[in-house]
Length: 220
Image: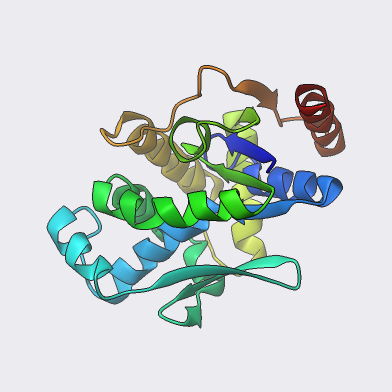
């Protein structure tokens, strides 16, 4: 089964890029970050401190998280209910960062992700796909984007969803998230030694074509 890992910081366009690559290659896209955001949402809904490992660990024993492919799109369910855009806010970004630093959370989701990759040709995007989730991936990418451009893209996404915020707030949130993700003790968000850096600042179609060329070269 073809396995492609696509890592990088938040707002780098990983999800959009991964979805397009999946479409072009006819493989399945799995957004692993959505799973951590969903655990973060569960913590918020239950009034659990996302940084408290004991509280979060107890919560994991009473919740269910699953992901399904419906009409070609990924739908994540929390306790049987689709989470929708509730997990796509700046607040849930920080919740996701905090819960993802807890070993029990990563163990809770790890087997689900790996089992999916064993059964399906897949591309996954996140922050530790190439280093932890799929260390045996056929191709690994690390996506980069100019920081201001990253913030501008995320701001437009949030405004389009009716979430009021500013460029400064989004940029500050991204810097805080990057620092938390890259310095955490468990599965820090770092570039895999064998990952290929992919600059996604410019023309999106050109980035896609570069990625496809590399994938075809590596897997022919």
